[in-house]
Amino acid sequence: MYTFQYRVASIDGDYANLERIDEQEDGYKLVARALLPPEIKEGTKLLYEMLQYTILE
Image 1 (cartoon, helix red, strand yellow):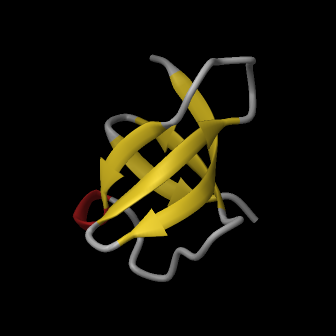
Image 2 (cartoon, helix red, strand yellow):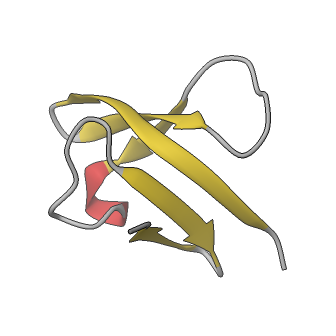
């Protein structure tokens, strides 16, 4: 299964722009905040695994 690491670059209303941090990738990934943990803020690091986002400690 694939796993990816992201950083919350910005939050814009009901969406968040995620920047990939485990590999170089151009641009941001726009994700609905409903799919993300509710306690995220700009700079939060996330792990995407098994179709879920969790906060990296």
